[in-house]
Image (cartoon, rainbow, N blue to C red; front, side, top):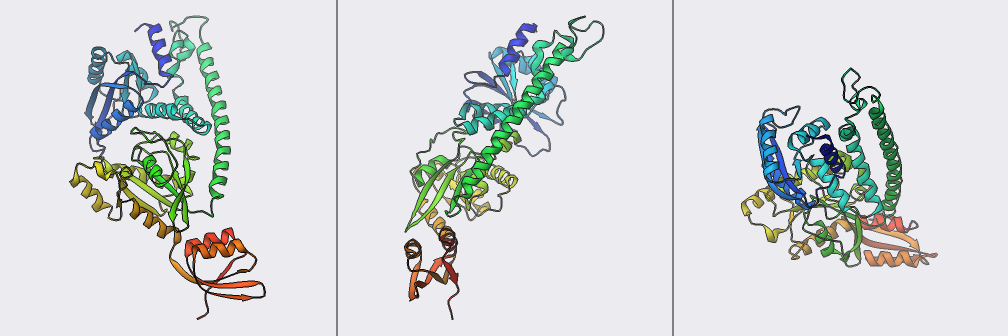
Length: 449
């Protein structure tokens, strides 16, 4: 292939974009891996379409092991090159992560841009990022992904021997051209390294600020919506609150956390947060970068795990999210599993299998409102906590504390003495805890028997 053509294609790859491009998808099923390649390829198609690509063909191959040079077999590469030509494809998207060398070899063979699953997801996140916080997080993930691939992306310097490290007679470029390419790569690596350091410093500041913001809400009951991307979290957020979160039928419609007050009735409320959706094999750089965004889930009092009940892969999606939650250290949080989109379920037998595995899950439809009242009642009980009968002691002039007690507790008896009031009440244990945080002068003792 002419070098100037390869240079253009390499420049195209650096944009990490598949918008309005014709794409061919490639998946590999390794025997004994337990990985459902067909289902994963369907998900890759949804990701590619979410990025704006048009799918012109899909290629799958069963293999015992991965080919170190092409990932897939040489014969499959030749077939892929023919399909690229006949389908006028602009990009080939692999469902697995490729090494820089594999990317380079497949691009040479196919004559078009090649990206892998992680690169595609990073592209989608980059196009969805709206706030400064999410843009910084996406850029960090992109740079950490790209940094090891810098040598492969500098093929436009292949005329210079130094770019490939060659020093012998007859190397490309000849006398007087050895070295500069390698120096340029090193310069770029230093630039990337400095940028990564700066981004990490900025995101660390965001982390600290986010943690302070979340902890400042300790007097409130904090609920976080978590779940697979496109499970309906944003629609549920809008149903439960007046947040007006953008809800779309596409992957990763929400990247930035939104928090709103959720009125539960009878004076009870919670703070409800919508978080970024998860995905099977989500790039670990992305999970690390978005840790600040996920602080809402990490410090939540309750997680609402939203599962798309209409998806044939509902159980696998539930497991994928559970794994990410465990990785974040919040797998032991109080959790209510919500089987959402029940109005769209077509395969009842598959749904019943999921319900047998998750017997405590609640069936709802955020779009139609089915099951929402049961959800609100369940959260109300958790917000209150188990009822306790205690005696609360406060000062008679502390009107705010007395008003809060009357609002959230059942007052059985009052006794006034020397500017103080003792109130025998029945109150939820969690409400009592938050009441004492908001009004430190209120003391609680067990009533005399």
